[in-house]
Image 1 (cartoon, one colour):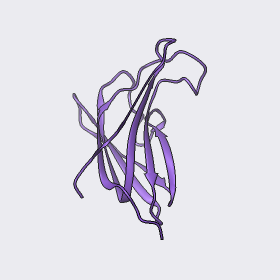
Image 2 (image 1 turned 180 degrees about the vertical axis):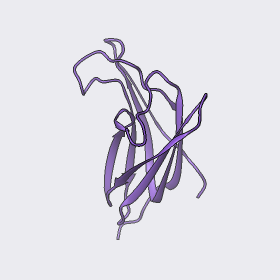
Image 3 (image 1 turned 120 degrees about the horizontal axis):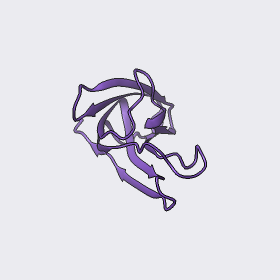
Length: 126
């Protein structure tokens, strides 16, 4: 049995999906990604809620991260209950039924000189 690491609640306070990109798709599509790491022996059932500055939250978006696996989840691909709008500031809260680790990454390819940002998400108290 592997020793799980991480927390069950995470927050990414900064979110923004640029409306367009520069370069071949899908590799250079501007996007936001949550990298989810599950080191436990159980599948992680994850729910994501999206918060906005000018309207009510949306969610939950549901995803499963299999035991002892990682999933790189593009926020651009989330569609149920609704797509996340482009060119809109948002934040996200990620909840899991087993401890996971969450890292946030953005590729901004609006210019030919791409920008990549990555940071660990904020881990809430369990």
